[in-house]
Length: 417
Length: 131
Ligand SMILES: Cc1ncc(COP(=O)(O)O)c(C=O)c1O
Image (cartoon, rainbow over all chains, first blue to last red):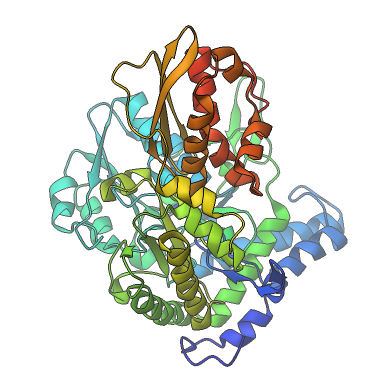
């Protein structure tokens, strides 16, 4: 890539790109890889890949209960990663950090363990129209089982959450509010603090889906005062492991989710005593290498500074929004003000199906996603079955935006002659 | 210029044959591609078990729509038995373009719908067409 003149405020993107082996390759006969799908999963820096490799080569052993040196090292590193994540999101205790498979599993854990014990017939669960299916379906399952009611905070024409509905829909009937901090379709940053405060004012518990915010902006669970937070390591430079944060008092009061080894203190013929936090919620052998790799990813992001990450993406998103708006006929979902959104841009070009857009972009080595992005209710709201989505991370540069825009012109030409 | 979007494909996409609805269809079926939520519906009018008229409607990408349009031409004059015997290779030959694993699903959706219609609501017994 040539010299970078934009979006380098705070980040040395040229140096960052060097850290990502996958970006060094060319695809489709010599075209540089333009990866614009970090919302689905981010690329991984060499340091994370090396950590996985090192674990398998040098100290592959099951964690906990091992008396030999290898097992002790694996355990120490796995538990160190937990503390790195704790620091990264500003949690009070490592006991509040539970490793899961992904955001989806984290949310299901809360729906199953907390939800089943606390939600009753007639209670309301408040969601937003911006949610990913993984923050909708677990609540639908729970609501069906308990005869509870789902209520959705809607979005306005700009794609922002209807703030006027927060107080109206979160009421003393509300048991739980589950809301995203950043939409994976429109990039909308939600007024999450207001939502959490309102939930607490009516005595409800609030879960924050941070799958898109934790990788891209500063997030502090104590400042937010959220009760639960779910996010995915694989979207923040790490391997495929998920995280659930929960306030200790809440977690202590919950029954386990997955029963088996690791999560017990003692087992008798008829009953068991659960392990202490956080292992109480980590049934079976965890994804050890992935957990350790996540610690390395968190270190990498911390070294860059999450303020700088956000600043870089704010600049790049502003640049992309202005360039994309010039594409004839394009409809961009979500706010056009870069201050109100993250680096996720879903768009529609009328008459050209997103699959076709993505297929033609792919010929030029550009990776974007096409579909409903696991947010069918939101697409329904926009009257679209599918959109194309370009998303950015620390390694993306303005030249890649230019390439996207140029190729979109080509797409239009193929279809409109 | 682009082998995936040959003129023939684009032409069928932009000017689909047999597009619309039939007032008095004998059989009809609709299905969607879970990948993108695209829907295709086929309506068929028969005489002595032979396709007289066919219409399709719904939304989709250029590949699925062109496949539906070209397939609709092929259906006319065919018996239900002949339709039941159509397979993946028939569609690939008809389209004549290289398709990756994802786009193959788009290309095959119309055939899936038509075969389901031909078999009645008991879905087609051979799922070998999937991949
Ligand atoms: C906002 C949001 N929530 C939840 C998820 C689900 O994440 P995972 O597939 O890692 O469970 C995603 C992933 O796309 C997301 O963007």
